[in-house]
Image (cartoon, rainbow, N blue to C red; front, top):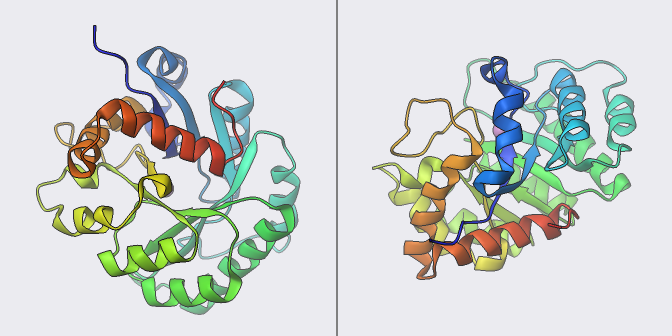
Length: 259
Ligand code: NI
């Protein structure tokens, strides 16, 4: 029998309503399918509370708390609320936070303000950051150079090979999703080539981004074997090695041992 591939899914959204029907059955079944850990990332205050609750309930889940740049408003005391939540021992990162200039009517000044505030919170709490960046790489890199987060991951990487080099030079990790398996994956594959094995993470960003051959279906962490297969091919190492290395990278980044 072929050895099972170790999977640490470094970015999920299992609080999403897409899992309301069968969340418990799905999450309980992950470890027997090789999924040893999942990071549940928050995107607003409600999902921050939800991610902590899930991580409390399942020993193979850990949580991040933070406000995504698509949030157009936050409670006046949101930083205090995040700080309280982040004191929970299952919270291992601040995220996802960042910049997103993709959607109509975005407010770059507000985004930069809450991004900087949450980077400062992560620094204060000595937690790594989970970074979201869409169509905003210039401003993102500028803020990162200024704020210098000590540890973190640029998740669902969509930038160029050159940006990947810059992110690596800043000491950060890079997470790749099912996008690597898509037909038009030339750009992410070029970026992947720039990322040394010790900075590489795998993630679903589920329920979105299901890899080929599951495109259009609800995604879950077991589908990451498809992403692992592409990475193994591109990096010239075995799928088992990619699974093990990315799991060890995520375990170190999120201070969350695998046993
Ligand atoms: Ni996400």
